[in-house]
Amino acid sequence: MTRTTTARPAWRAYVPFAVGAVLVVVMAILPLLNLSLPGILPGPTYSPGSLALLSLCMVFAALALSYNLLLGSGGMLSFGHALYFGAGAYGLGIILENTGVPLWPGIFLALVGGLLIALVTGAVSQRVSGIPFAMVTLAFAQAGSLLVRRNAQITGGEEGLSINTTNVPDFLVGVVNTRNLYWVCLAVLVIVYLAALWVDRSAIGHVARAASENDLRVQVLGLRPYVAKLVLFVVAGGMASLAGVAYFLLQSGTVPRAVSADLTITVLVMVVLGGVGFRWGAIVGGVLYTLLDQRLTVLAGSEAIASLPDILRIPLSEPLFLLGTIFVLVVMFLPGGIAGTIDSWQRRRRGRSTLPVLEQVGRADDAGEDAKEEARI
Image (cartoon, rainbow, N blue to C red; front, side):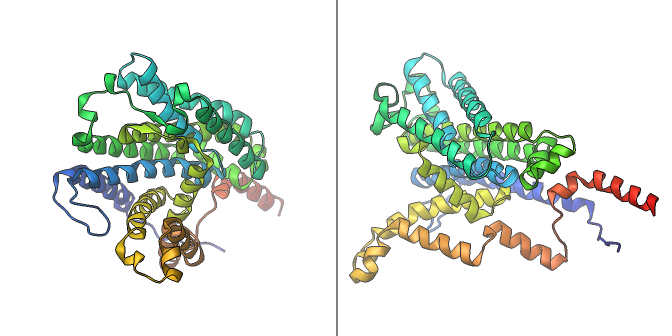
């Protein structure tokens, strides 16, 4: 049976890039505009409070993108991804505090440190898969969290680590320069997105995605899934470290939660909320979760909630309860996340089906087998 396909116009391939470019431009000029979004932003878009919130959204969107590269492209459920985010944040803080290195070389060194940690831990973690892989990554994250909390003279311990502004340019210091930090966070998000796009479309990305479906068959095809997954793991760790650097500059410091397993679970929720395997879904999930977390905290402490009967006031005054309820509803009614649900709806509308990645990788091999079978007949 021959499958008929409808040719797509060539220009449609460039639509996502055009939309993305427009969104980046809009986000870039947003601090110059006087726009108000009541209930979403605490003030006009040019105000420091709104810019700080939007910047935090972009930082966590970048972190969610890096985790989506692991889970969505490589099928690797990690419980220790926050380790690399914390490596970027604490790495930059320790370098600025204890050396005379300027900011930009310090950022480079922090990223190198994050990549090395990802390489070492990834090389060990990749020896197993599935639940054992998740447990190994969790063990590494717990070890990193313990080191941060027990070495107060270096990391600040439970109090966290504040930024030493001696070697930081003045235009990145203080509330008055929140606009500049906003643009830095936007640049980080764009860089992380382009890195994720490059990896997904590279041969390494295709092999890793295929290996997540059937590792043995990929090996039979003569490919090396271990190397592909390790490269994917290291790149995702580097992306997370870059997001950690942006977080450190934005918050003027960092706290032990930046390396905790709790943060990894939070990022996992962001990715699931947006849609596993979708880059724009990870961004939407990161932004949406961060906005909900911030605004529901304000709502929980409002007079409107305080005036409710205890049976309603007690649960509604807990932001985590509200976030958990929203997440449960999304999982129940939007099992593919926001992006997955929209994609499924579009495919049903077009009458198209998704071709498995493994089938794409092994198509040449299957074609050869079919040719041999026809020859025999």
